[in-house]
Length: 396
Ligand code: PMP
Image 1 (cartoon, protein in one colour):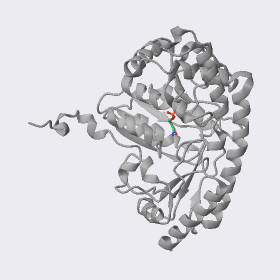
Image 2: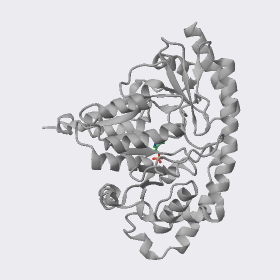
Image 3: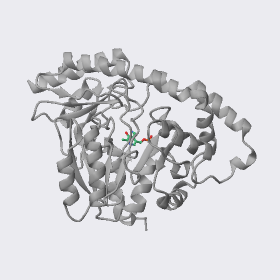
């Protein structure tokens, strides 16, 4: 008798999906395709030499005990460095409130693990980051989507969501240079969101991978600086490199032990050598300089993409003009189906993430996300020319 793997899997396994590509039967990125799906630093902003040196030093200077299990909450000098950096941004925390995670993605997993029962309701922005949906769904949660406009999450709609029953478990927000829209929550709304969380007793999970990557208008700070009960997620993925898998969670002290145990249950600890290498790499203010240089690059790439959009997009198309982060959100004339158009675009050697990936209903939308951080100017120019031709052909 063979093993019936399908029947044996847990009910939640049906909700285990790939991040984006599951929606599209055929690959939408053949070799040579110009892909606007990227959301990472470009190759020339990756600190390869610096990390090589710092990693060698971490291996050379570590005593053998570093090769063992240990430092479950994370390497203390790294937690100190994070607390110091966040303090400079106006978010005053203690290293004891920091848990080192394998990227902020793991922070989301740990939050889901500690908080979500099947059927629990989670408030999410509409649109939101698909990687978070990918986690919360596996814990069999229900979503309460709340719209986002040019000033971020719509506060009246958020309050209605908080009043809906059963009361949502938490709200998952990306307040600064949101993935996928690039929008930043405005200062008044920041205060209102904190106030609503308090009034309704529903905690905020603040996911902040892009907050340091402002290139216009300065630092928006964090929601955590306005409310000590916010659970905050940060990462070195966008400021240094995603493959380091170095992120952190800031959580109220009363939760820290349990979060640390939850992480132990997943992977015991984060890589102790990489944690040391990140500390060494950041010495002497290097990361601040690195981010300052990257900001100029991202601003120029963003501006270049905005110019190309102006030239190539059909009439009636709108887009966001972000002050930071990696993404522009494009809204095509109503009736457009970005799921269908991405297949047409693939035939012309260009691709993007259709808006439907970022909503909890997965329904086709007239919107799409374009990443401006990874592509060269030539690729952006050529890619948007191809995309614009497809859109104009289909949208009249
Ligand atoms: N949250 C958001 C909003 C993101 O955009 C990303 C990366 N795409 C992540 C979390 C995951 O990042 P990390 O590499 O730190 O796990």
